[in-house]
Length: 324
Image 1: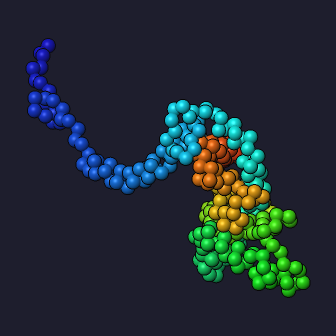
Image 2: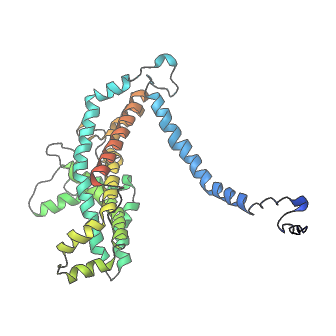
């Protein structure tokens, strides 16, 4: 049997010396990375400098007796003493009660009004962009400017104010809307201001979600005998808006915890209507300059927001996989 002495042809992809060539680097890869960091870098730097570092430093200050200073000495360490003092402070706990009352009004009202506006404007065919812009524009207004308009023109508590002028037509005496805690008419002023500003933003979120609902669901419901209106809303529209509804409720609740501008400009630092941020502001930056207690209170408030948000998300099923 003859043995072939022919050798296999050399690999065409092999380089000199029979070695495989090195894989070529992708052209423009470093340019893509450089472009990415060019756009993202300033944002990350701002987030680090203006958010993460202040939060970490605030947590550090909360364990010290830091009065009139942001660099306490080691002997000023008090452990959890600031947290205990804040939780035992009646003014701080009363501010949390104020928030609870405010949230009880603003969360359901904002949700209902924004959803109602979205349902109405989603069916409008004539001048749709105009009406959406009209309801969204208040969101671009400053809380300070809106508060001054509410306080000085509408609910200023004198005879020539807009609200009292309307009441005067019906023979009702002037109402001191913001200056008398009993009865608490100031809640009407604060809640109406917040509704006017933020309903348009959440309305846009609901409109975007409504436009994602397939039309064939409604057509199938009509074939099965469902009537337009409440039946289709309850059994089709509302379930399809579940994820958006939960997200909107979370945003409204968190925004309620952060209420400050309208309270400060409408009422000032009055004990009968002082939200948590107002109290923390006066504690840390007011006459006391107690940055340790202020930082402890801020972290307590942040922890409450986180716990309530997580519980709300778990209770309403936010983030769960949708059933197929």
